[in-house]
Every structure is written in C-alpha cells, then in structure tokens.
Length: 287
Image (tube, rainbow, N blue to C red):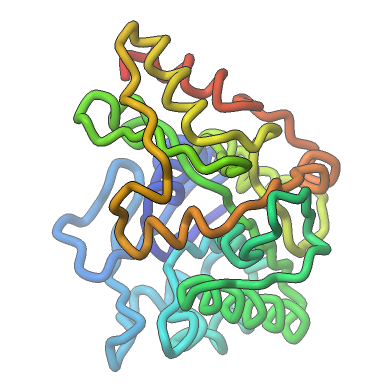
C-alpha cells in the first residue's frame, strides 16, 4: 500500500512519520525539499504555482492507494487539483482521499452548538478559499467514484505546539472575552481520524474533527500554568488588548462544534477527549 501526502504540515507530517502504519511506502511533497527523505517519508518537489509537475509526482499519484491532502488553497483554488485533477481521477488503485480543512469555514455562530449540517459562513478569505477547495474535492469524488473525506479540524495542538510552549517563552495570554470559547484537537486524535478514514468502512463526506469540550481560552492557560506550578499571566480584557487583525478576527468567531458524526461513523475513541488530558500528557512527556 502506498500513501502520497501533498503538503507536509504539522498534522500531515505527524501522521506520515508516526501513524501511517497501514502503508508500506509514504511519499510526501514539499515545494523545494532539501533532503530526499524525512524519516520514513520519501520527499518529492511539488509547487502548485509552478508551470510543470515533476514526473515523479505524477508517477506516484498513478501508483497510489491513498492520498492525504494538506496543501492549502490560494486565490486560484486548490493547487493539487489545479495540476493533477485528471491524474487523480484516473489513478487505477486510488480509492480514498483525505482532505484536511478547518472548522473556520463555519464562521461565527454566536457560541451555539453546530454540526456538519450547519450553514458555513466563512468570515475571511482563507476560510472562503478552504470552503471552495472542499467543494472541488467533493465534486471530484462524485465525478470519479473516489471516496473523499473532508476533515474539518479545530485548533490543533500537540508536541512542540501547545500552551506549555507559550507559557515557557512568555507569549501566553489570558484574554477575557465573556462567552468566548474555542474548539481544540490533539494531533494524535487527528492522526486517529485520518487512519479511520483510510482503514475503516465509514462513507466519505464531511467530518468535524474536534474534542468533546469547547472551552474559554483563559481556562486552558490557567490549567497549564497550574500543572507547571507557575503563575499564569494576568487576565486582560479583550477589547483593551492590542492584537493583530488576524488575532482579532480569530476572536470574532465563536461556536461549539459537535464531534458526534466523527465518533459514530469513524468509530473513534479520542485519546484526549478534552484539553485537560491532552495538556497533562504533554507535561508527562516533558514538554
């Protein structure tokens, strides 16, 4: 079994390096890889903006059993589909494709609980591009007969990327915006969800990948500080705190995202059902 990964971001790299045990061979793409391998992943160059596709990438797609797509869209759409839609649709062994998206496509829902049936209301260009890319991948599924899984990921944390790191380097903040919650998911549980798509019997479609407890961001910082035995940063009112436009837009979206479909159809038991288990495990691992 051969897996091809387009875009070796944090989550896709974690899966390819540590969790893709179903696959005897894993090929991953970077725009301009400086080495031939990354752990067990064989690296190939792919740039959706380039005029030509490396023939080794085309050959890898033609021989692939599964695709994991993490490369982000741009103003011209999804870079993988832009260059390789025909080859992907015609790949003889290719059965399943997992596309990593974001719950950002839902936009703001005023703190209400939502699921995959909620009307997306993307509030920024990045999320609108993601929603368009999702639609293009699902259209390829209908046209080609491939199974496409769109995983809408919530806020990702894990080794090297978490509130403990921010507390250590002094960038953690406790901004107080009444009623604000964020949704989170540990990278290990993302890997579980990806694997369930490739190895299970669930139908393709859209799945929210998030933990059980949307929580106020200041609560997460306080809990992490308690585990480390350090003073948490002082609370600051959101409206009085200087933020970048991106940070402020992040706080402009408030929703509680349900994971019921993921649990039921992907048959997934979360390793870290809330931020408490996830952060405690990271502390135990030496973060």
